[in-house]
Length: 141
Ligand code: T46
Image (spheres, rainbow, N blue to C red):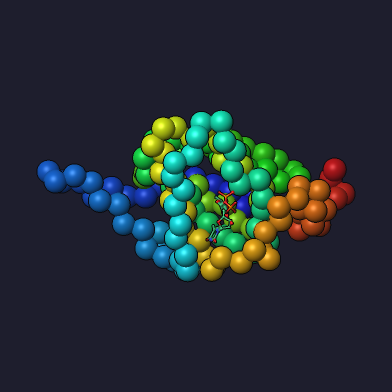
């Protein structure tokens, strides 16, 4: 799917446990300006429901599991995050919704920019209008 994809990180394991390094611009395709994490989400809760104009992010579920639905006017895909070695890259202009958080789920997010509410589309109709132009898909739909 355009601007969305799973990424595999390395696991350095020895008798003491596991270590996973993630280096900006080497293991992920951007500099990291911000990190945040989401915890304590009840099972019926849906988060996200927005898209970003410019932001690049990688989502990693470090403990437990969570599903992430991504969509654009052209396509959609749902990912299960349940492995701390696998991250979900989400680039600009992709709508995302996080749901089915398991008990104890820890969702870590690496972001390319500082927090800026002006970068958000929180209304799907507004998003869709701009996204159709962004993806050049008006003629296809
Ligand atoms: C995203 C998904 C995966 C801040 O003050 N700083 C921050 O860095 C962030 C991310 C949020 N906030 C504030 C804004 C809201 O008042 O925290 C509150 C909750 O944020 P929001 O409702 O946007 O949270 P989610 O879980 O719906 O979405 C978040 C990110 O905002 C978003 O970029 O892609 O996680």
